[in-house]
Amino acid sequence: MILAVAGGKGGVGKSTVALNLGAELDAVVVDADLAMADLSGRRGPDLHDVLAGRADPLEAVCEDGPVVLLPCGRTLAGARAGDVAGLVGAVEEVESAYDHVVIDCPAGMAADAGMPLLAADAVVLVAAPEEFALADALRTRELARELDAGLSAVALNRTAGESPPTERVRRALGAPVVAIPDDERVRRAQRHGSPVAGIAPESHPARRFGELAEEVSRCLGRRVGQFRRS
Image (cartoon, rainbow, N blue to C red; front, side, top):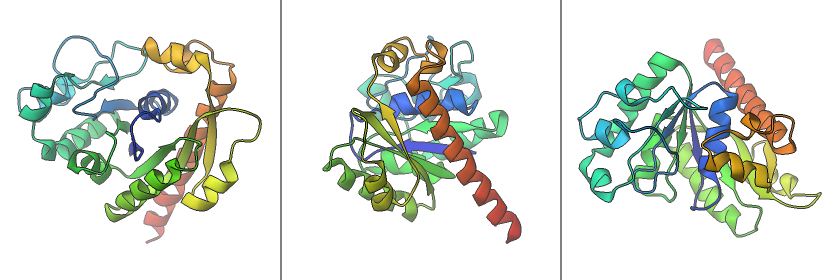
């Protein structure tokens, strides 16, 4: 299973959602934001090295943190040196060794954003609760459809108040929506490279990330069943 975590614009919390889903799904998280990596890893080979042919994908996987991670370098020189077309093969090699992969996608609609979607079996869209953010999410959903990556769920991130607009977002995007609350424990966990369940397992946001993982699992289960019937 390869799951892409995508969003039409930056700053909506894709990396946070990817990290927490990786923990919930027991998956390797691949930081595929080649120019603006946000998930830290240990010193050693990273995705820039893999795409430049300097390292094997499995050599770059870091297993000694709270979540198994294939990190990405943070230099523009490293981003320019790699061949983004090699991303699909690299991710598939990681999947063959670890079974489950979650890709933290870059923002936007350029080729480096489309390549993770090309590798993915399914997508989780991350959207802000503001009205204008839906247009970006819709564009990303259409790109995912063109690349045959089905939409499994929507993470409506950093919500506040008792009534987030989950039903309106569900109708607009056509997928289950899980509201993730704006919570300092999520930010604190992210600063330490940890899922929120690692520091506050009984918290409201930890439960919501669990619900999001369940929605993804249900969707992928249905797709597997459809493939078997065909």
